[in-house]
Every structure is written in C-alpha cells, then in structure tokens.
Amino acid sequence: MSQTATVSRAGVIEALRQRAYKIRRHALRMGEVQGQGYVGQALGIADVLAVSYFHALKLDPKNPDWEGRDRFLLSIGHYAIALYAALIEAGVISEEEIEDYGSDDSILPMSGMANYTPGMEITGGSLGHGLGIGVGMALGLKRKESASRIFNLLSDGELNEGSTWEAVASAAHWKLDNLIAIVDVNDQQADDKSSTVLNYEPIADKWIAFGWETYRVDGNDLEALVEAFDSALASDSNKPRVIICDTLMGRGVPFLEERDKNHFIRVDENEWSVALKQLDEVYGVQ
Amino acid sequence: MSAKKKLKTSAMIASIAGEDQPTTAAPFGHALVEAAAKNPKIVGMTADLGKYTDLHIFAQACPDRYYQMGMAEQLLMMAGAGMAREGFIPFVTTYSVFASRRAYDFICLAIAEEKLNVKIVSALPGLTTGYGPSHQATEDIAIFRGMPNLTIIDPCDAVDIEQSVQAMIDFDGPVYLRLLRGKVPRVLDRFEGYKFEIGKAKRLLDGEDALIISSGLMTMRAIEAADELKEKGTNVGVLHCATIKPLDTGAILEEVRRYPERPVFVAENHSVIGGLGESIASLLMKEGVHVKFNQIGLPDEFLDAGALPTLHDRYGISTKEVIKTLKQHVA
Image (cartoon, rainbow over all chains, first blue to last red):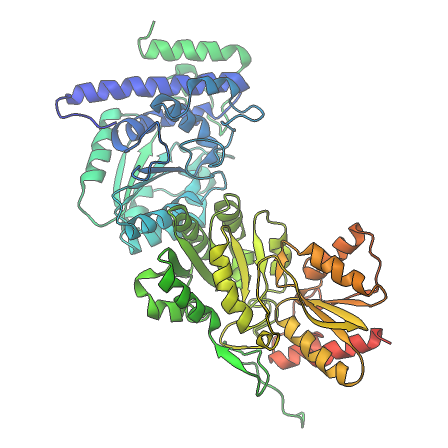
C-alpha cells in the first residue's frame, strides 16, 4: 500500500477518496443485507480507515498474519461493519462475503471477533480492552525488535472506561512510540451524545497531560488525516501517538447525515437503495 | 481484659506452614527463573505485587524480562493478552481477589475467549490472609469455573508449585493458578513417584474408612488428618485434585467407587459455594453415584479478620477441625 514519490499529493488524496467511497459502499451493502447495522459509524469512520489501510499500514492482503505487518486493533466491536468494508476493499476478505454479513455461520459477525475474520486482530466489543491489548503487543514487538506498529481504533465513548486510561498511562510510561491510538469522536454513544453522557472534553488536553504526542483533526478531511498520520509516523519522539478524529456519523449520505443522531441510526427498508444512490451522487459516480 | 493472650494478625507474608514443617522459600519465583533460562519466550508481569507474589525472584534474575505494569489489574490482563499475541508466555501475577473480582472481564474476553497463552498466578487464594474480605479470595474458583477455556489449578505445596510452572509452560492455553507464596510447606515429596499433571487427580493415601478429595493447602490438612486418624485405627484415603477445571472425572469416579460405603469429604480452601465440592457433587449426581457426601470448606460469609490459625479453626479448615468433622461422620 506504499505510495511512490512520483504520485502527487493531489493524486494521493484522490486515490484515498475513491477508497473511502468504496468502503462506504461496501458498508451500506452489508447494512442492506441485514436491514440494519452501525452504518452511521461506518460512514463516519470511512475516511480514517481509507487513510489507515491505503496510506499508513504495512499489510500483505494475501497473508493477513504476516509477521511484518502493522497490527490494526478494533476495540469497538460494533464498528466491525466498517472494518469489514476496509478489509474487503484491501482484498483481505472477498467481496462475496457481503451477502452473508451478520448471517448464521458468516465470517462477518455483527460484532468483530478475532476467531471469525481474517485481518480482525482482536475480539472487541467489551469496550476498554483494545488499547491495553495494544500496550502488551507494543511491548512484545519491542522485545522482538520488530519494526511493526500497533494501531488501535477506539471511540470517544470508550474514553468512559477506566481501563482505557490505565492503558493511556502505561503506554506513555513505557515510551511506546510504536503505538498509535485513533479516537473516533462522533459525539455519540448508546444513550445520548458523548458530551452529555460523560463529558471528556477537552479530550486532547487529557492525552497531552498523560504524555502522548497528540493530534486532533477533522476525521472526514482526507488531507488533514494524511498530514496527521504522516506527522505521527515520521515523528522521532519516544511518545505514543494519538490522532483524535472528529467525524460526522452518516457522512457521505446526506439524508443520514441529517437524520437524528443515534447509536443505531434507523434506516428503513426502502431507504438502502436511496442511501447508495445518494452516496454515488456525492462521489459523482453515475 | 482477657487473661488469654490473643494471637495477632500476621504481617502480609503470613505462612501457612506449621512449626518445624519443611518449607521452600518462594518456589514459584525460583521455578520460573529456572524455566526462563531454558525458554526465552517467558516474561513476568505484575500489577505492583511482584514482591508479594514471589515474582521478585524472577525480576532480580531476569530484569529485562520483567514488566511492572503498575497497580492496574485490568491493564495487566490486557497487556498479558497482547504479549501472548506476540508469541510470548506471560506469567502475570496479582492477588486472587483482584484477578477474580476486578479483572474478570479482561481475563474472559481478552484472554480466555481467544485461548491465549497467559498464565495468571495469584496469591492469597481462599483464606490465606487475616486481612479480611478485601484480601480473602474465598469465591475465586466459583467466579472462574464458569469461564470457558480457563484451566484452574489449586496446588498443595512447594512440590506442586515447582512442577506446575513447567506444566503450565508445556500447556498451550490460559491458566489460573492459586499461588502459595513465601515459605511454602513441602509435603508431597514424601509420596514416591508423585508428579503434578494438569487435569489429573492423584491418589496419595488409600483407606477404606473415609475418602477426602481435596485441593490446594487442604490436601496438606487432609494428609495430616489421615496420619493422625491412622494412629487411632481409622484409615482415610486422600485423592489430591490439584486441577479444579477440567475436573479429572475418571479418577474421581473410580476412587469413589472403590469403596462404595466410604463417606466422601471434599475439602477446599474456598467457599462451599461454587468450588471443588459442588463440582464433585454435581459429577456424582449426574453419574448416579450415591455416597455419604460432606463438604469441608469456608462458609458462605464474608470472613473475619485476625490471625490465620484462629481463622482456620473458626472456619473449620485447620487439621484439628478437619479431624473433628471426620470423626462426626466416620464410625
């Protein structure tokens, strides 16, 4: 997935834009199969996943367990629909699997689990686990003198969990410069807006205080994301890095962007085709 | 003021060893150092209890393989899972109360669900401290027995602990071991050919008058009780069941059936709820084996603070009290 020096910045962004479009499209198609799904989150995080999987991560799609890979840990199990979409786009999972999404014996269960899906590194879903597992893996990689890195995608809701902060403190203590946390701030969790349920703002200040190299960007702005990821990965600091991404649930499908926000955005049966059509229009696809 | 001098609660390192009993210091720490010399995958991790789980021995011998994770048991289990994911064999140590009550979800989902090779070694199981309920893990087995994939070991003494370290390394999967620390009694080396094996119960003594099936330090009490009763003509058999899960159902059924009239006592350093006793009761009922069945274990209560010998008498798990219970039921 590495980019050659000859590709212009504009070319890089345009390629990522196409990947983000496809990720959104795969996610909507999975949602359509089940008639439900966390598509609001998937649409919101698609740009972050595009930059992660098609700009930042070292991967071998044909060999998802390759020892030299970067490890991408999804602690928010309910975002699986988004990660499956990225893994399909990356060629780790066959696109045909979309038809079985969330069905009996599918390799794509509703909540992400390591034992079901190639490329799914950990079992998420019990929130507050991913970053701590990442700490252990990052320590293990250092023991092995590996150049691989750990990426952990967590959510703003996951900041409610005390265990997340045990991991935040530990990563700084151990100077885990091979650990990159990505926080999706969509300001939405199960009962209400994150800032209403348990306010963690100013989020960046807290990570800075714990000793992390901290970036905060618009998580739906590909240029800003690329710049943040490039800076985080190029930095010679011995601190762990966090990229806090403000995202909009439903991004890319105007009627979902505008719908009342909820942990589980309602999409009626006849609306899936509308959603796909709107997405195509937003991306100028006929 | 009472004329009788009261026993004092011990400092944190309270030994369960009797006076003049042979002991080994920190058998877990020394066995781990020995194993680590042969296996570079072994690492030690703790949540601010290295000194109190005998892991300090390993820390001194292998400082670059020792991870002090801070007083954060959830993190300890997550980081242990991460280490195992990268191919290491982490021995993670804390107290049984914190492993079972505080870190359960992290052991369950981050470790057990994925069968990761993490060895959870926890001190102060059952009633092995006089500090009261905050430190007494009287229900840890009950908590962990329902967790799929988790092997539970309750070693009797220094011999069991030394051998279980290598056995855990040879076994691929998550294990929870109830550690005896500090000066740990050595009792099992009197049984020639004794070998600790995960999943195997071992007959230590044969006797037709009563059978004690026991785990952990209660096997030591069972042997002491059997020795004393033998002098008075009562022959008590002892089956040591150091693996609580998976239960060695074959050996237990065979032993119980050898003398069908013999009363069975299950002795454990644990609540009578949810531990070895109820495991065996359930097994016998499912198999249609009807015997006189008794439990020797801790009551379903938050226990008192105080001196261990006082508490072991009070709650019926001292040798003296075990003998008393046996005499009540054995002709």
